[in-house]
Image (tube, rainbow, N blue to C red; front, side, top):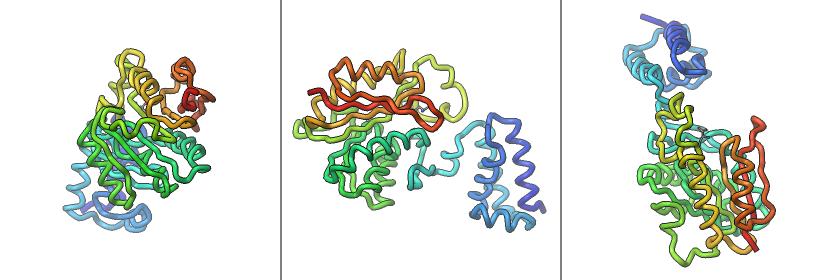
Length: 283
Ligand code: GLN
C-alpha cells in the first residue's frame, strides 16, 4: 500500500516529463481532488496510505493531465476575481490577465451605481459575474453564441445568486432594438488570436474552444466588428472595453480612434503587456 506522499512524488516525476509547466502544483491539485482533501489536509495526512478508490480516481485524472488536458477541466473549476467558477471544455478558461479588464470596468462603473453593463462573449460568465458580485446594483447583461458556454455561465450565476440577463447569439445579434443606446459599459474578451498562431498547438489552449480564441488572419476581426457595432448600443458617454493580445494595443487603439471613440487608452496587465484598450462612445 502506497502513502499519499509516495503517490504524489511519483506523479511529479511523470508530470516533469510531460508538457506541464507546473508538475508539483498539478500533482497536488489532482490528488486533493481525488482524495477530497484540502491542501493542508493533504500535507497533514501525507504519511498515511491512500485507498484503492482514491488511487484509481487519481490515476485517471493524472492520465488525462499527462496527455495535456488542462487542470481547470480536470478540476471542473477555476478561481477568478473573488469567485470560483465552473469551467468546461465549452468555455475559455478564465485567466488572471482578464482581471485587468474587470478592474478597468469597475473604475468606470463606480460613479454611476445604476450602470447597465453588457459582456459580449461571456464564456463561463467570469467578467460579468465579477462585476455584478462587486457592484450588485448594476443591471447585468451577457451574450454568448455557444449554448454550452451560456449554460455554464448561467450555472455560475445561480451558484452565486447573481441576476444576469443572458442572451444566446453572436455579439449584438440577440439584442432587440430596445437596447440601442442603452449600455453604459460594454466589456468583451473576444477571440483575438491570429489564425496561424503556433501557440494554438501548445498547452491548454489545444483543449479550449477555437471559437473563443481565434479571430481571422490578424486576430482582430471580432474586435473590429464589435467596435463598429457598439456605437449603436452605447449611451452617449458610455465606454467600450476590450481585452486583446499583448501585441495588439496599437492596432486596437487605432480601430477605436478611427471610429471616433474618445479618450482611448491602453492599459497593461501585471506582466507589463498591453492587455486592455478602452474608449468612450463617439460624440
Ligand atoms: N489570452 C488568451 C491566450 O492567449 C486568449 C484569450 C482570447 O482569445 N480571448 O491564450
